[in-house]
Structures are given as structure tokens and as C-alpha cells.
Amino acid sequence: MRPTRHAFLSGVPAARTAPAAPAPRAIAGVPARRGRFGRLLAAAALTAGALTLTACGTDDGSVEHAGHGAPAAGDEKPIEDHNQADIVFAREMIPHHRQALEMSELAPDRAASPEVRTLAEEIEAAQGPEIETLTDWLDEWGVEDADGHGDHDGHGAHGMHDMPGMLTEEQMNHLAALDGEEFDTAFLELMIEHHEGALVMARQVLADGSHEPTADLAREIIDGQEAEIERMRELLGEPVER
Image (tube, rainbow, N blue to C red; front, side, top):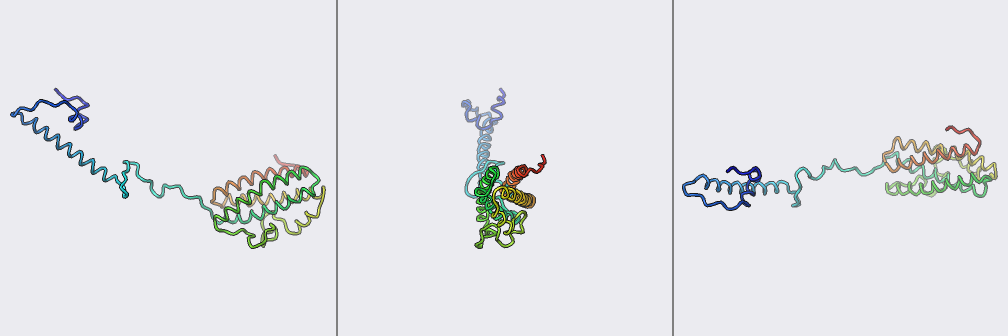
């Protein structure tokens, strides 16, 4: 009787679980050799299994599954990094934002238009937290604030007036001396100029930076300040492109 397909494929384990066969007759040498050969195969299989486990072992004694070894170093996700463009953006946008806050802080006591006062409040609410975020990044990168040597007025730091849209000290003093509708008009015109400068800076870091969180912030600045520029042009009665 031929063995079943299952018994043939299972090999040694099937021989172990099968019922004990009658003892072979003394004259049947082949069956006796076959049993001995089966025991040799079983021993060889156990030895091969031990060698396989040893080959798959790691240096620390653990065992890895075949085909699922530790990932190569090149496969690991790189840590987010920054470059010089990101540093320049953060160092310059902080005083740029601070000046926008100074301008906005003048509005409650000087603006005649409630729309201008509301806009000033919104600018403060948006740019204040952005200053904190940018400052935290500079701290993490071990870089000092652009005006970190004692001058924190936002427009008096050396070289700060060279940034796009940055008001001079004379312009700031002139704005602070105005009141009513004159203040509203000057505030809107100067803030549009200021915002347009921020857009230049944000687009520059999107082109040259490598720090993804900085790129995300730059996009938020672009979206928010473009919308505010449109509102300010409408308040001035200027035509707005749609």
C-alpha cells in the first residue's frame, strides 16, 4: 500500500505519529535499513534547524525572522534640519513682526475707524504667537535674535531698516503723531507696505529653506497677510484684484 500524499510531504513527523508497525521479519533487510535511514534524516533535520537559528541570530543573542532584518541606516527617516536661509528668515521676521505689533498698539487710542482697530487687534493676535515660535526655533538652533544685544524696539536695530517693508524711525514717529482719519489712512498705507515686505521674506525662505516647520509658517504668513492686504486696500477705497 502506497503512503498518502500528506504522509509523504510531512516526512519524519508523520512517521512519529503513525501507529507502530509490526516488527519486520528477519529476512526483510530493506525495511530495517529504511527505519535506520529515517532516523538519520531526522537527526540531520534537527542539526540543520539548529544551524539556521544560529545563522539568523543577532549579536545580542536575539533571533530575527528571515527577510525581516533590521533596516539599514540609510532607510531611517532623517531628522528635520534647517539651513542658513531658515536662520535668516527667523532672525529678521522677529523684529519685522515686532514693528507690526508696535504699529497695531497705536490704533486703540488713535484710530477713528472700528475696522482699523479690529484689524490691528487681529494682527497682534496672529503675529505675537509667531514671534514666540520663531524665537523658540532660534533657541533650539543656538542662534541669537537679530536684535538680541539689547535693542528690542523692532525698528532701531542695526540694519533692520534694510529688510523689505520695514519702517524707518521717522515713519514710526510720524504715525504715532497722527490721530483720527489721518492715522487710519497712514496706518493702512504703511501696514500694506509692511505686509508686502513680509511676503517677500516668506517667499524667499520657501525657495531657499530646508526646515519644513518654517516653510509651513511662511505659507501661513503669505495666506494671512495677503488677505489682510486686500482688506486694507478696500478700506482705503482702492481697487482690489479678485
